[in-house]
Image (tube, chains in turn cyan, blue):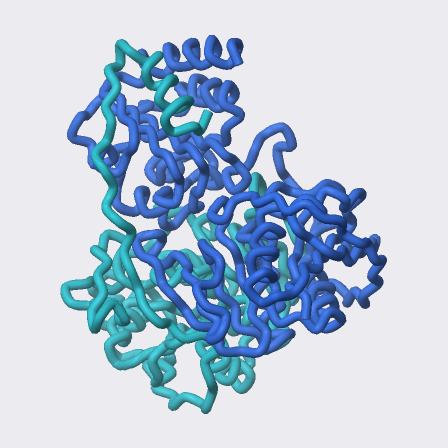
Length: 248
Length: 319
């Protein structure tokens, strides 16, 4: 089985979010970048398929040279090779189009992406990719088993979960549950050394347009001070929630 | 040219989000000077849509659509969009709508904006404001394609009544063969989901162990709320992953969010930031969550929660 794991290069979850150039660009100064958490759960599941079922694992990213450390980290975790499509990631559609082009010639059976990136939260690349390459698609995937061509997966739904049967070729939008937090791997020294020798192929982009354009950003207005209620006076809390906030 | 809206139902009855997206569709139709057409799939009675400004309902009934299937539902909405020559399609932010939206976008060559929190700021060019960076920021984006798909953030636009009469037309689209089939659904029918809940009661490590969740469930029961938890609690296996809210878990956009024994890590705050009113109960007055809260109680959850349950029961009895 040939697996492709799509890796988004995103600010660490603890990052302070600021914007530059008159609030039109994300300010990357002082920001630590990581593998998108939803993608990392998928990558870790891919390592299981590699170790137990002999799958090959390629990781791919659409972005400039600044994203290479993130791909090297994925190689250090254990992916066999990496591909970087050499163009800035603009909108979800253009990223999906670039990925689809590489996938069509690469013969991948299983494409693992995260359900969304934690920066733009678009949640569109996995589904668009499935639509573009005409593969089956399971979103919010929290469990994945492959036997030959047959696939059993579990999808998180609002208020529960759903077990589905499908077949390769398949795209999933993965998230926590594919593996547990404690299964995530921190690259060891040997992995980091080996990652330096693994191929990181740079592919030039194809011509494609963007369907959406980011115009500007703003930050939420700061919150007013908290109203503290004494723990001996919970009647007052009920009163405030009913009469002031009007939520009960 | 109607604005098309997919009004979701569950077991034949509309979900609350159906009325919110219908309200949103009406606002967009007003901006464009056109009407609203809703697509309802296997819904028993569509008359409730009239109250939210829907002019016409395309009523689809098909045995293969009994269980949600993203590509089949996307195919139905695709055909409805073409039939109505719609240039704007409105969806919700339910797990199902977010699943089908990108497939529909590819079918229709449409630009898709997810997590949209307000009516378009402009229709020419077409611009909408959405949440990004897990609610740490808002992004205004322009959709450049002829057909636009908007995914409305749950509980952001609200319900807006617009009395009218919707005509109902039976619509029989082609339903494609299913590449993904549902084998079983595991969903507690008596519990409100985090996505649909108006009130969410959430607890963290301050509860000391999974055996202490009884009072959280009771508090949720009294309020008709969904239960949720912090990331450490789900990682420790005290509560199911489906309850984890925050940056890598579920987003919460409820009217009221009550956090018990959660210190308020930045990733958690981001995930619940879209909730309108936040109440924090914590023993530690320095807990960062107090800075993000509207109301706070510094105190021991094991004393405060049982007492709050009694106060709320008394309050509910008087209502």
